Length: 397
Image (tube, rainbow, N blue to C red):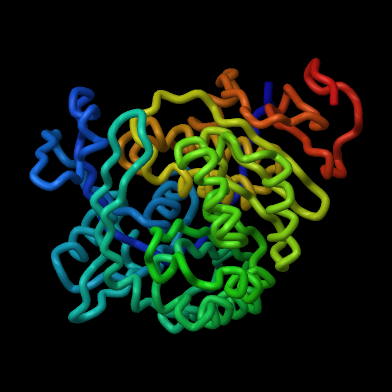
């Protein structure tokens, strides 16, 4: 069992920048889920329950999750001067006064909102209006207000038109400037919808510009597959289907993907692989953290919350093994509530549940040649330089 990871230390200061929206999440009674397949059929009516209203997007999901864990956070995003903008600001302010102080209120712009269709036991459907996120650029970042910030995280550039419509120059310029200030950086993505402008962009070119200025690249497996090799991604999608893509993509494909992303220049690649867990690869380390068993209520924001757990553990100085455990633990807390961050507890409560022997899910991928450390609950890959070829937790390499 893992030993206690929390230590008396100053809480990390982290800026979360990028996409922000207000999420409207109807409650689905179990009886209504049978109709989900025909939900968007013209003339159809699906009865739902009360709607949860919460802020969403990377800024809110990752930022509020970090706030609930105990970190000092600065949220940087853009909303319009409309009702949805007021809802975004007031919802954040109800969580903590001042949490929305870093948001830009743009005159005569509409705010982003998302209708989240998230019935129990199925993946989500999003009806999304990008709003003011599309006009956000590197010039909107308040660089002068980042004094004391230890880490800068940027999320969802595929849903922010002006950050990517120039081939990624603005994204590169922002990350380069942040790195030049001595602040570590991380980057998350979002999956653009098929047929959108973002779906057809040259993402390899964009990543080649951005990743040399990124310490930690944290996309989902599906996002990374799409952005590095769209035809191969679409082949996998046809072969396995969207619901099973993460669980059935061969480990060799995942490892080759991570190596390619490292070659673009980032320091560490961390791939979110759905219920299979979290895969991390750097030039010296290769680890896989299985997910914890959880009472699944909704998956909205689970990936963002996983990132929050990782950033919190990393900035608290935890080992990579414990940082990955923290990431999947916070992700598991997230899925136990309908809203993205409502289920997330303070750090000591999260780690206490881990220490009590929280059960892990199995990994469906074939990890032959990997070493299991039962004390850490972590698989060590063949490229992990800190793994010796001996017995780990009763299992052999």
